[in-house]
Amino acid sequence: TYIVNDACIACKYTDCVEVCPVDCFYEGENMLVIHPDECIDCGVCEPECPADAIRPDTDAGTEQWVEFNRKYSELWPVIVSKKDPLPEAEERDGEEGKLEKYFS
Ligand code: SF4
Ligand code: F3S
Image 1 (tube, rainbow, N blue to C red):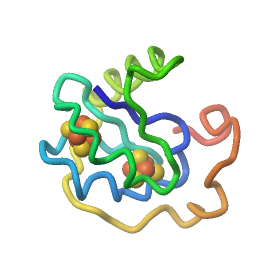
Image 2: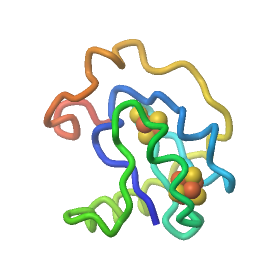
Image 3: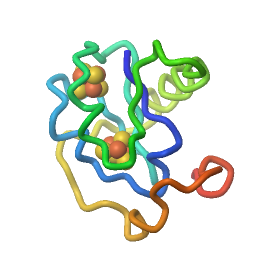
C-alpha cells in the first residue's frame, strides 16, 4: 500500500485524488489518508503530490503511517474529486512538526 504522511497536513493539494483509479482517498479537516486495504499499489499518486506526502509502505519508518492511514480512512468520508488546496498550503509546504502543530 501507499500512505499519506504529515507532509500533507495544512496543504491538502488533492492532486492525488484526481489520479487514483480506485478512489481510496479519505478526507479529514486538513489532510487526506489512503485506505491501506483499498489501495492497489499502482503508485500513480506518488509523483503527483506537490508536498511529497505520499510514500510506499516499503519505505523505512512508514509503519506508524500505515496504522494512521487505516484508522482515519475508517472514520473520514471518501473524496473523489480535486478541490482547492488549503489557504496556507504554500506557506506550510515543507514545514516540520506538522502533526503536533496543525493536525485536527
Ligand atoms: Fe490510489 Fe494507486 Fe495511490 Fe494507491 S497507489 S492511493 S491505488 S493512486
Ligand atoms: Fe495531500 Fe499531496 Fe494529496 S498534499 S491531498 S497527499 S496531493
